[in-house]
Length: 167
Image (cartoon, rainbow, N blue to C red; front, side, top):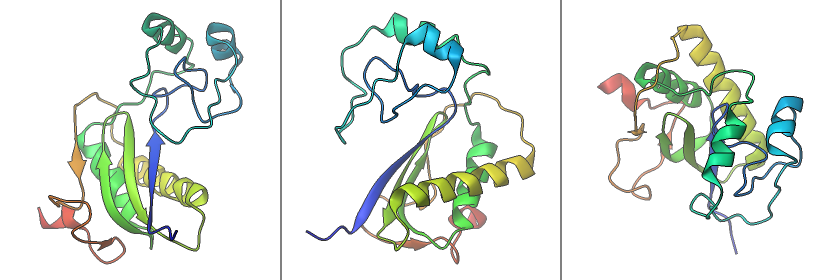
């Protein structure tokens, strides 16, 4: 089977903790306070979403109180800065949804492994957001930077096409 694209999820700080009772794709908890509040990492092997898995919601929310900083939630200006950060790469992005607490990307197959590309995209987005010096404010947002009805209709070469500039 040929891989045509990869679905990548990038979480903002505080969105999905490594010791989330539903499971996580992390093997360790980097914060002592977070470890004491929620226990060891809940590493899972499945690639399917566990977001709707039944769990102790109160425990999950209580663990979030042990975060060193408030969870990051993007407002509209920050989301646009993140999108433009993604556009600063040569990666072909078939689809992108930037939400306040996490981002979904469908990336074309690349010579760069998806895990490494996710790091690159996150770095570019972070740099762009920092340059904008935008204050962190909560705002519900679902933004498709491609402006498409269907993810599979078109490909966007982000290095040469920025739909946000046309708005």
